[in-house]
Amino acid sequence: MAFEDFETKESVVVVYTGEGKGKTSASVGLLARALGTDWKVAYIQFIKHWNVGEHDFIHKIQDTFGDKLLFHKGGKGFFDAGDISAKGVSEQEHIQAARDTYETALRVATNGEYDLVICDEINNAVHDGLLKKADMKKLITDRAPSTSLCFTGRDFPPEFIELTDIATDMTKLKHHYDDKFLANKGIDY
Image 1 (cartoon, rainbow, N blue to C red):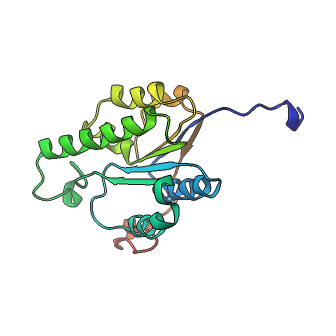
Image 2: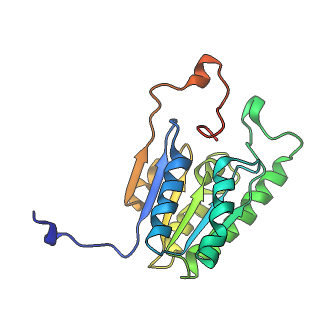
């Protein structure tokens, strides 16, 4: 088949999931690519409330891109994750934060103003029961026709793969955390 036989979709749904590292990093790369092509992008963070490198990066480029870049950090930290769970945050507070963040994501995904809406760690919020699978499905099915979506995080619901256009499973081959080394700033966060 020749290149000219291919068509272009008006928008796509991209998923970065799996146990391996690189899901958020891939979404930040997608953010850079979209902004570089003059798209209007919303980056919605569902879990990470603490300061991480991508937050600093987005804050540094915010003035450059102005109203072309919306950043919303709405999580309360890890939920039900053993020793790394957020301390002093009730289940209801986690659910409310996920709900509020979801409402922002739904608004920008459906209003037709954004070319790309990245929902970082939404897969975790759904898997952990902070959001319902129906919420995720609604984001996909109700999005504006010209708005592409990107979902990141572990445990993307397998039954929704058919609703996506690009799905990548980040598979861990090795990670130094397994050898009892903490995360490295600039690499892991």
